[in-house]
Image (cartoon, rainbow over all chains, first blue to last red; front, side, top):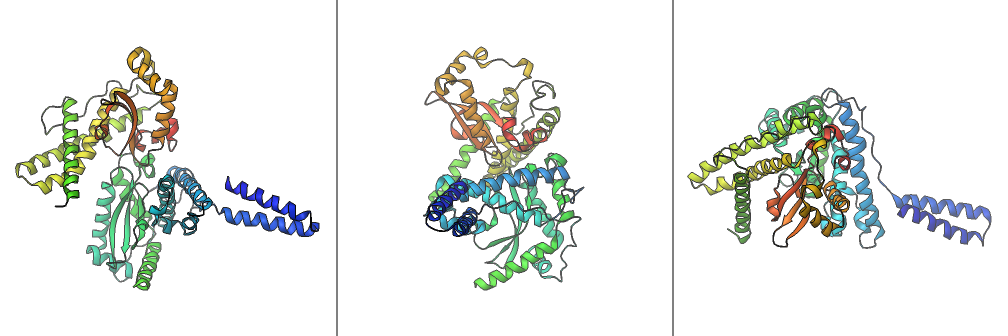
Length: 261
Length: 212
């Protein structure tokens, strides 16, 4: 709605200007106004998956990937865009929309009550799934070695990579209702940890926690192929993890944490 | 302990009592042994609205797991109680609420449903209930619209309920998260709809409003 209104306003002003100047100048003004409206609109778009829908077979099936991305992720995006549009329309809340979704999720108390739920669920849902898709790749990649920074961090926190996998598996299978399991970097303790969040809450809601790897434990993430057998889904997940991406996020988080000191 | 801790403990203990009483009311035997009730119809009876595959999994796996986990939790709770280990009792409350709530909710759910060919209009089943629905919402359709809107909007897993408020002597629509039983709201459960994704996903995928 606000896209359309912005465009119409732009057009009206331009026509008034045209009555006093030459046609060429009118055209330039009209084009400028409509592109400003487009920039102001700033609806986020659904990023494409970094692979084909069947790339994660047989571990995560094609049909699930299609519905999960094109329906569920899209629905969160629509909710988020609705909330951002409303926030942008109000002078007192415009700044929240401009923060970027991750930051906005840390400022939920500043958001009007009616928009808090949509921002939390839609915004969380949007960023969580972007991270999720990017954390996976066809056939996965080699697990981090103990000689690598991420491998060292996992060893330090859990004793070994296997122990980390067990801890993650345990937490992921025990998420009750809808939620996520995460490997996070805790800035304060300079250590990695496994945490879970309910619904579409993101670890980024808490300052000082950077998500490195996330597993969607909502039933829609696995029900078509695994039905009630979530443990089988969690086991299969390891086959598609993109550890290179996770390691990159870890390095970035460590660097950010250092610069915050 | 802070006042907050004491309040939380009180609330938690109330939940445990609520679950215990509710499950007792379902007609289970000993305190430590809850059992999966049989469905009052065949697994295929609710076709084409809820298909056989969903009913098989929903009853035989999901509900059965709540019962098994509830039994395990209550046995541990009995042990903890015997040892007067309050910390252990508190630690078990989550599992009791999840699984006990799951058992209570699904036990009610199966009895709320019947084959489409056996369905009876609410006015024939209970003129009194039909009258109350009309009085409060104007019509059955208006009630359904509000119920479905609120239930479709449940974030994550949960239930939509038509409940009875004994104090106000009125009907009410409420939603609960996860397996929180309606008793936690003070309402008497009349009709509940499970909107955990396992209740509809195989058939309706993401389109929860169609399932409702």
